[in-house]
Image 1 (cartoon, rainbow, N blue to C red):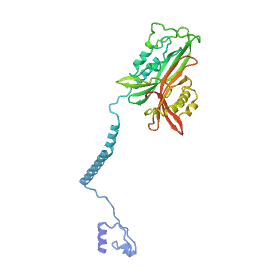
Image 2 (image 1 turned 45 degrees about the vertical axis):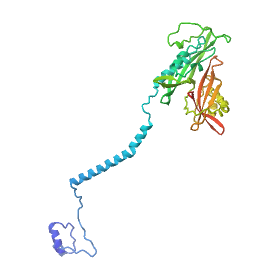
Image 3 (image 1 turned 135 degrees about the vertical axis):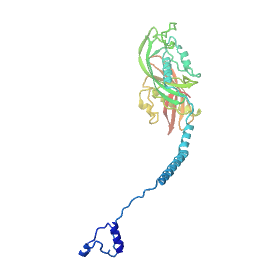
Length: 359
């Protein structure tokens, strides 16, 4: 052991500090105190990481890269591609929807025609309205009748609500002027031939002789618009008064057994719909339905017909022919077709939406 220590000292490998045990040992640089029993002599060493060869490092990089590529490829095949395939299969292919601007334009023109009524020429606007509708449309079913006079001052198409790819509902606000004979017993004026005014022919509705304008009124109208053969047309049901279009579900089959027992409920629903009491309307609708009333703009003359259908996904669709009047101020009436989404609970019926009739 002494020879080994001497060799380490000479080579500079023994870096431990000298242990001084006696004066003699201090004078002799080659003498050290022997380690005590069970005492491990301190070892002074330095740990260093051996540098790998460049080839080994490159090999590891190639292997890790290949593993990542395989994992990503497997994830793409197992997860991404099936997800995209399902999404592509669910999406309609080459479906052309109704253009919102064209729908607004068509609805605005139609409302201007519909709200123009001259008792001297009561059928003046029918031809123009018929040309703007689908083939099954019949404007005489909702045209105005009576001795009153109505003409639009302002027509504002606004919100477009999508029903499906080929069908939308356009909300239109219109400010109209209303007129009536000066005397209550004045008969409607006789038809007269006059030169049409500038503008659309159907909007020729000057105040008839012996009539007076009694005021203006804002009306909210919902117009169903469809795309047929590339043409933007008004659907067969025609216009209805209403603020919100609602969301009408798919209709089932005619339910002849339940229809008669729900007709009184339908009459109460539209009476509340015409009024100004939102509380009364909410009593007949489901919570959260938020069907806005007409706020007394028109009065109900009656529900002329009502047809309820079987349930689809918990909802039934009823179709009503509803008569409206501007009485007592003006003798003007119109009949409109509505679809109503309904549901029942504890032997009570509730409306979830009211919109233009398209069923």
